[in-house]
Image 1 (cartoon, rainbow over the protein chains, first blue to last red):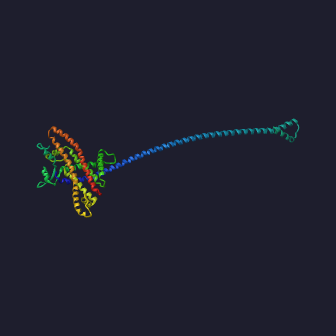
Image 2: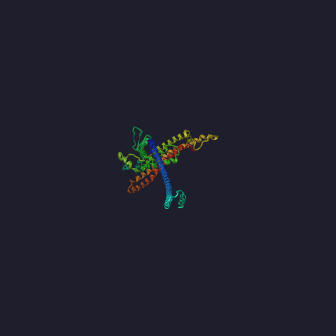
Image 3: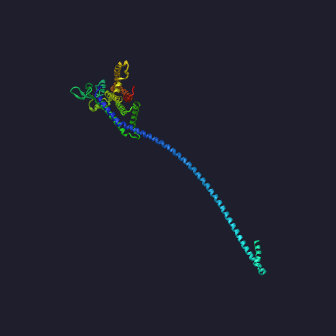
Length: 156
Length: 296
């Protein structure tokens, strides 16, 4: 129970341990703790942001998908319309062409008939004259009867 | 008990005597004290080897444990041991932040050191009182070897710490408020001396009264701080010794004493942590007072 040098010894060791703690223990541990706290806070924030981003991306993907579906439906509809139109056009064209061919053929036939008639007409006169010559056995004045015969031919 | 013919009071006194190494007056010079009278004769020029040894040993253990944790502390998830140390540090940090609102890098580490060190010193109380002294007696071969295991039952230890804190208080007061601030604190409270009018003749009297009161209040701080811890630990130790005394009084008493010791030890767990905490908190409060520039 005597007060003695132990008092001073304890003071010195107290100061020493406080200094040691202040220099080597306290800053190291509190810094590590503060850093870890920051790291965890950052991590949580990043996770939060990531989940928010994910949600946004999902929403975006969904809207894009819907848009794409809509576009595809439009394109298909358009294509169908176009196909129908092409078919219709083709039908019209084919009908036109058939009609053209038919008219051309008819015109051709008529032309042939006319030519045959023309030929027949020109030859009728000659044949009539030759027949008349034969019948009359005499020379007939060709020029005198030509007008009469031409009239006959035009009546054919 | 170290000797067959020992009396109860001899047993108790033996347990309350430190292992003292000091300078005997006369021709003997420096040597171990063989009894309480010799230790008293040595006066101030003596040192308690047991208190000093346990105190420094436990302090080194504290440094070692916390340095190990500091080396392992990273931003990765802390292991069990590091987690425990960080828990202690967080607790101290919060306590300091609650009370001490100034900038000083010394206070928190000092609070940690005080809390852990005092706690460890107090915790030595939980070791049955005869174990270590008997072990020492066995090793040294001297059955009368004095050996106290709980450093905080030595007033030198507790007062050594509290007076160091006292000098720190004075140092920080002068550092933060200037020397005149310190003098003012001692002389101008609690009664403000009149500065004008005829009452000014009373000023020296006021200053004298203030000085007397403030000196007592200043000196009372370290003494109450040190003696509170010492008194609590000394009383606890004394009860452990008295309980241990009952082991020599027959089987029935021995079993009863066993239960008593268990009960007291469980209660003492509260006391040792509470005393360590109180010592730390008061230190922080005193330091805060020394930093409080706008006082009054």
